[in-house]
Image (cartoon, rainbow, N blue to C red):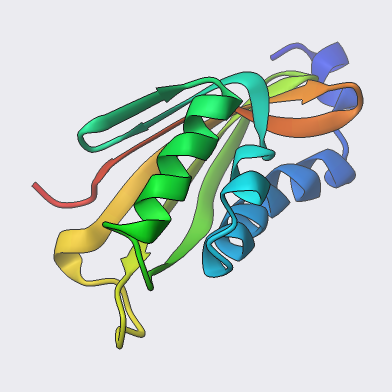
Length: 138
């Protein structure tokens, strides 16, 4: 990253990107597929184990189904691990966390994940352009 690009990155940008994780956690808490999908760019992608959703509408549809079936009654948790700016308008955020099933207060080892979030600033707002997670452990 050049000095010029670094100068354009503000603490507000860093906070807005980190806040995307909280938006996802809140949307999941209410099983709100619309709020979750709206974190993404229109053409955003989401890759989870065994699934691929291309575009905000596919992400929305996937989650509506998942909240009614496999992820019914679940919560998610996560925290930022690192943030690297690719330019003043794009960055990669790495997180760790996972799915909490009913009665769990901590993520079980077999549900722990690491994730990469490629984010982009569009019309002054940070959005998720691509999300992919993988199991934390082998």
